[in-house]
Length: 288
Image (cartoon, one colour):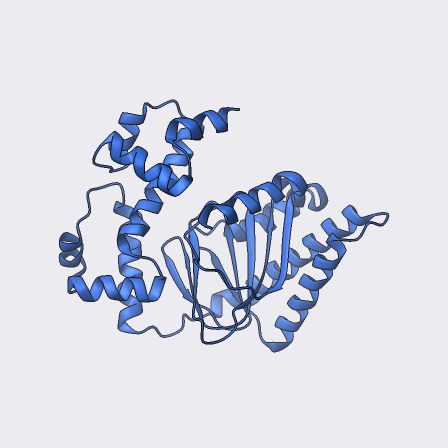
C-alpha cells in the first residue's frame, strides 16, 4: 500500500498533471510515510487525525488546510473512532504556470516553499467556500466538453489565489494550538531524526539526547505518529536513496554508508523491502 499511493499519484501527474479527490472517506489498512511528485493542497473536513509533514506534527481541526511540496515525507495518522474525511489536490508546477503567468505563478508557488508545510485555517464560511471550489474542480475534471482543460486550470489558479490572499490575511496572527507534553516531545524527536537520520542512532542514545525514558519515548512516538522510530528513520533513508539513485552515479556501497546503513547488503535488503525492487533495478528503471 505504501508505494501504491506513491505510484498512483505520480502516474496521474505524469498523465494529466493534476489529481483531485473530494471528500474522500475510505479507510486504509496502513497509512505509510510517503512522498510523490508535484505539490499538494490538503483540506481536512472531519475526523481525528495527526499529520506529519517534514519535521512538523499537525493536530488537524475541521477547516485546516496544509500546503506542501510532494517530495517532503508526510503521513496522516487518523483514529478509527470517527470517519476520516479529507479532500486533496496534487498538481505539477507547469500546470499552474501556463495559466497564471510568471509573476503570479511565483507568488502562488511560494505557498509551497515551507519545508514543513504551510497551515491555513478556514472558518465555517471559508470551509464551505473551499469545499465548493474543490467540488467544482472534481466534477469539471470528468467533463468531456469544449474548454474543459482551460476551465480546470482557471479554477485551480483561482483556488490558489484565494488561499494566497487568506495566508496574507491571517498567517501573521495565527497562534499554534496548545500541545501536550507528549506531543511536544514527539515534535522534538521528529526534528532530531530529520537532522540526524544518516547517523547511527540507537534508542538508548536518542532517549539520552531527548532526556526522555526510552520506553515512554518509543510508545509516545508510535502513538502520535502511527509509525515506529526505526520505521521513520529507515523510510527517511530510503527516500534519500531514491533521489541519489535517480540523480547520481554513486556506487551502491558508498551510498549505503553515506545514508547510515550498516552494510551494502543491509541497504539492499531494506531498499527492496520498502521500494519493491533492488537499488540497482530502481536505478535502471529511472534511467529508462
